[in-house]
Amino acid sequence: MSWQILVNGLVNAALIAPPAIALSLIFGVMRFPNFAIGGYITVGAFFAYAVNVDLGAPIWLAAIAAMIGTAVVVWLSDALVFRPMQGRGPVTLLVLSIALTLILEHIVRLFYGADVRGFDLPLQRPYRFGDIRITQEQIEIIVLAIAIAAITHLILQYTRTGKAVRATADNPMLAQVRGIDTGWIILLTWLYCGMLFGLTGVLAGLDLVIEPLVGWYLTIPIFAAAILGGIGSPYGAMLGALLVGLAEELTVLILPSTYKIGVGFVIIAILLLVRPQGLLGRPEIKK
Image 1 (cartoon, rainbow, N blue to C red):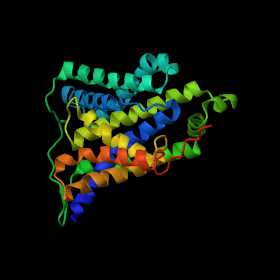
Image 2: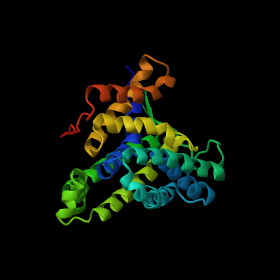
Image 3: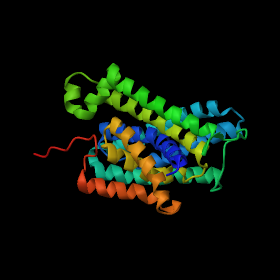
């Protein structure tokens, strides 16, 4: 087995870990699978492209703008789409989220077309360590994913806001009784997750390409990671992203690379049959 495949798997895992964490957080407080994550990631990628290429700003500034801009879009989607329909049930919200991601992708396509694009960055040769090759951008993706995982852990475990998020996810009615402003907590969760989706769009543009479907290509691996780890569990999403990222790359040892996208479907199908709550999730108690 090539060490290059393992490195590629780590990069792949680092790319899907932040949005998988965000998806789990959103599911924890909102209780529905939000398929609009693909549209959010696409919006983040093109926010960064507009600032970096159209305005000529450095990529770090474009990343900050993408995080802020995507957070605003995510907040607006909650205020205008999901919150008014909150009492209609998870299936209705799921269908709305699918429609929303299509709308966001077509808005981007309206302004930028369907051409494949890239950031305005200086060309750099990859680093070589024996037979292993890794680019500067891939190193940055791995470092940022580790930093996001650590920051999310610290927030959830050691801050009042993080503990309030966990309480709201566990039992929103009890959290309200205990004096937690669940509306404010949900807003903060949307904004934080929006920033993670925006950053994912930037990272996808660095490692892959920028196009209106860039978010859609990542949607299934992200859901597979979240379900594998236990949807609603941010820590499970971290573990799931690592396993899915490695599994997708190891697939090329026995199958053509075009079959990598099918790994996510297989993982979701097996988990739903064998362990629906995921590796770190808790089984639902039915009365």
